[in-house]
Length: 435
Image: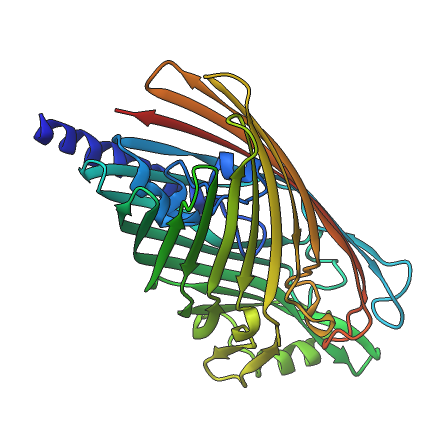
């Protein structure tokens, strides 16, 4: 019987992992992604001290120690047609300039599986999630006023993990394990030059940078859960930083200026017609999660969390393109806090409803705010519900409504100034099976 259950668990878990990895190829908007479970998102992400479903692999690995069943959970997270606009300022690109990001729906998937090795003592968990992702595609890329900085960037990162969780006592559990991170990146922009014959700035080339292969870095995560009283739970979790070294190719496509002499000069300086080696390094931060969960009544629970992210290590990006001078992009980000709160109500033995709020502090200084990544402080509200379908299955749905505070920069390092406005809706669906 144990052998049959083990084979069934591994087969289903691998299927979940494969599905999640394939789904993530669609990409995701935003840099850090915290929406790794539907119930957790319904609570505003305040889940580190509750962590009572398999998404504990992300929110608090210790939470899986209290799971006594073979459990599989998975589903998609959507970033539904985020709206982002830009209003220019003087002197460049000028008051009255308006731009928009291309409307698109992004999505990624998560998949988790928990298997008791020693019932009530030690559990094994395997899972996949997307801790980071960035998609910033500007509409009308060939005429967009910021096209010389960035037309589009797509960044993806997947975490594959195996964790052990141990219940040391009824009131204490720990958990953790390695995280194998996979990532790729691509970006595009136009290159321009001052035309000496017309004294106007003109497009002369299109640049596409694409990483090749999928570099793998090993990080780790860990968690702790305390239950000092039957009503109170305390939790803490950690995910380590990684630096990714990307290597790939840069491809230049010439754009005619209509002047043969100028076109010839440009052609002598850029490697048209052949891809050339390119590389860069990106730094991904440590994440600390702290929080508590308290049962006001047997049916009503409140949660509060704080997340601390060491974004300060994301200080600069250097692009190396063979045969050309390095391009250095200073970032100078700072470490930040995110505050989350949620309340859950067990309406019946089969129905749970929840809601939450969050305030997320941007790490990005004004000088770095631009077409490549226009970040801002964020305020979000969330809601969701979970329903048991018999004894074996459960469905959770939730949605986060995320407002980016209007962000105005007059000190962008590239001289591209104005105001950015962004709003996003993130619906989630999870299906859980216990066997």
